[in-house]
Image 1 (tube, rainbow, N blue to C red):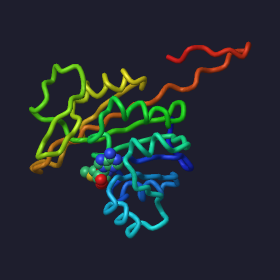
Image 2: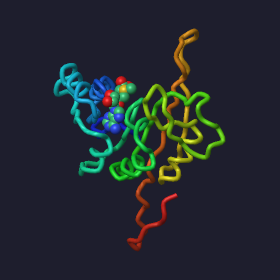
Image 3: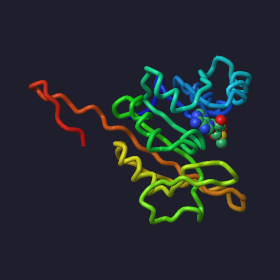
Image 4: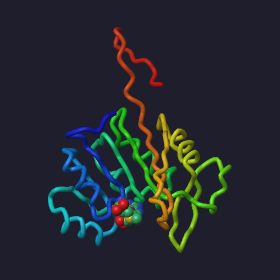
Length: 188
Ligand SMILES: C[S@@+](CC[C@H](N)C(=O)[O-])C[C@H]1O[C@@H](n2cnc3c(N)ncnc32)[C@H](O)[C@@H]1O
């Protein structure tokens, strides 16, 4: 699904809402959710009514909204701090057929065994995070019914002391097409 003008896009863990504001400028209808009252207040001060930001835990928000989204994303946001076996099904519920999910985070470094079958819980500097290499996230996404997961790494500028950013993109299956008899054929 292409996310163009008028698309409804949800950011989980939106912080001060900078990405949402950029999307608003492109004609997208951006909605953000962040658990931190401080971040939500900062988003309101910085962007006013340009962006719609809710103060809530991402999982709680997804479980209580009746809205559907064309795309959901989390950039170093809630997916990093929430059990993905609980969060991914909740995201799936609120994505329109064919809708896109994008997750961005730092790689796990040497804390994670690359032959682990899936994303695992780890603690770094007292912060609980769910971490994995791109292939581990991809396998978890498939397990929860997302299709066509793909990953890319964005490298920091030469000499920078930051790590690469891993970006995963996936989508929920499109609704199966109707046949002439009014029945449906299975999604791939
Ligand atoms: C590292 S910041 C990233 C903020 C923003 N995405 C950005 O890139 O500028 C992580 C954000 O996720 C929010 N967050 C963490 N766990 C969350 C949860 N369970 N539900 C909603 N927001 C959460 C934090 O309050 C924080 O604003």
